[in-house]
Amino acid sequence: MKGIAKLVNEYLKKKLDLTIYNDVFADDKAGATDIICRYDPSEAAERRFIDGTRRVEEQLSFYCRSPNATKARDTLDDIIKTLDNHHILRIDDDRLVCQCEAVTLPQFVDMSDSGKTTYTCTVKIIYRE
Image (spheres, rainbow, N blue to C red):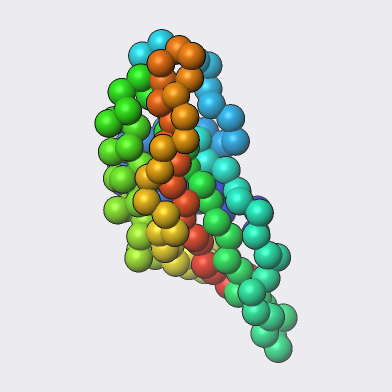
């Protein structure tokens, strides 16, 4: 389903007051801490049902880049704590319920020439469509 990342990011904005960008970091401001969300490659469907629905598992990776390595790691840790073993509910015509599971804890990626440290973590989103 298109828009799962948007749904998850809106949920995180409400819970943690974070702005999360999709796919690429925003402008590189010297003191800014930026967070992005990317879809990981995943199967189109885990299981198809006779009624035409399917169980879908998608993985989202969150990346946090900051001049303060501890802040980058802690921000992703907050995201994991907020999403792991939680359900995100969207009530409209489709009554979508997403189950979230942490796949990885925050892990170091690199340090840029400008001194910003990047960490990443991955969350699995499970839903039926």
